[in-house]
Length: 242
Ligand SMILES: O=C(O)CCC(=O)C(=O)O
Figure 1 (tube, rainbow, N blue to C red):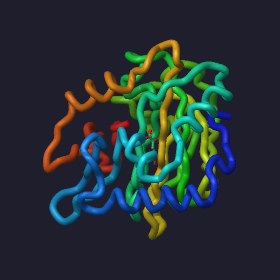
Figure 2 (figure 1 turned 60 degrees about the vertical axis):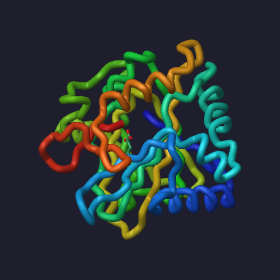
Figure 3 (figure 1 turned 45 degrees about the vertical axis):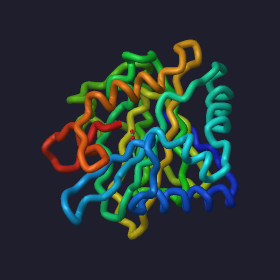
Figure 4 (figure 1 turned 90 degrees about the vertical axis):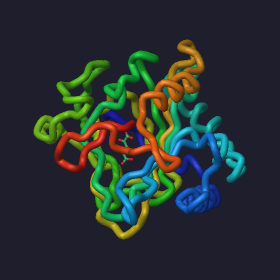
């Protein structure tokens, strides 16, 4: 299995608080400096689709010590110390396309550490109809499948044994940076946030500041935010922006 389901990582009250945080983040002016916003679309279609580097703000706003809880989970699962590498919330808007199949580390992360572990926390119930995750059940070890700019071809991915993640608000999944996955289009009428914290083994250091410094230096911005799609694979759906 390429992911593990963690039931009830947070309480219903914490779920409610995180839902309110996500709704607030989507309001104009809802985010302070330091949090990195990404937008997609143009003109009146323009919408916030992701925020990154938000954990300090999120914890201050909600009073939930979520980072330590997730770090402890990673320590328990891996038997190693863990440092936050990157933190993001993907806002899966109604009708939003899914993320194409990929292995997270293929986005260049191996320059920083050979392995990462992520905790994706659901603040709404998730399944295929709500833009949920789908994982390959094949074990790639620590190897990359053939890919183009990090994207695994649809045919290859669909030849794998696969499983959709079905989970309740407050549940999380744990997976590593080689686990091949994609997400479904959100065909529900609800905005579904995916809060994803990624950790590197402690022995590789605290890499988050350098990662964001390098990442932001290489990105195009405008209007106080960044364009979400750094790479366009031509099908209008795919992005390697991870
Ligand atoms: O949030 C999603 O739908 C998928 C996210 C994902 O696969 C990623 O950010 O690597």
